[in-house]
Image (tube, rainbow, N blue to C red; front, side, top):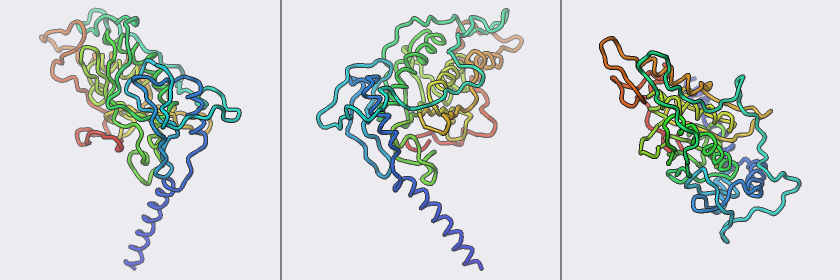
Amino acid sequence: MRRSVRWGLLSSCLFLALAGCARMWFAEREPWRREAEAACLQSGSVREGPSVTFVPAIDGPGICGADYPMRVAALGEPALTGFADEVARPPGTIGNMPTIDPINRTPYRPGQSHPVSSPPAQLAPGQPISLGRPASPAIAAGPAAVTPAATLACPLVATLDRFVSDQVQPAAARWFGQPVVEIKQISAYSCRGMNGDPNARISEHAFGNALDIAAFTLADGRKITVKDGWHGAPDEQGFLHDVQGAACDAFTTVLAPGSNAYHYDHMHVDLMRRAGGHSICEPTPVPGQVAAARAASRLRPRAGEPAFTGSVGQPRSSLRLTPYADVDDTRLPHAVAGRD
């Protein structure tokens, strides 16, 4: 009896493992992925230059890969299109395919869109804690370096480029008065299942259609990490929540701290296609101004203690606020490429 139960469990595990392998190794890559890449290139929305270079096609293992992958070292400023002789060139025409990225998606808007908010000069009149003056959105910002350089497909590069220029940099200008000069990524192209599970559904990382962002470095060298900033200083929380809210309008999947245990220290964005144009944005976006106000209310000085003025940069005791109750991130390892 015990032997039959044991063999039954073993057979079930083997079946699940083979099913997972079949999805990764024997399924065919969806045709729309190649069409989306080629259309993106034909549109000219991503151009080759010092920060973007085309690399040879990635064909496998299994279903993994991209037909026209790019190596991206910076985001936020396009350059001139070109192809190396040894790199596969996109076809001149592909049927009646449109000349823009054909990924059909419906932006996530729980009642309204998520424009970058401006932090108030004073969260509550008469109170001593302030987030400082609102920064001017006109501060010049060049491309933000991507470290390490990321291998990605053209549709995601095009969306990321607009996202950094139109949302991330204005948010940094408003909250910190300076631009982002570096974006740290911890996973771009990676042939694997979701959350590093070989038995799970194939990840969008396996097609260069996803990026995991762990930190932003400002012009003065200050680093805003997703892990600490999400529960950190008011201006850091305001910035990161505004970035997440804007990402939910730009991408079809956005997972930030609070979505699940695997994303406690980074923000995952991708352009996955789902039936009906369905999008996922977790946790539910909170405007940056609201997040910052909540954080500041937790830091108000007790009677007899000195008050903060200007930008909140140094804590009274600790700016680390309590994370979501069901995840103890002190026990989780730092996320690494391929294991998010």
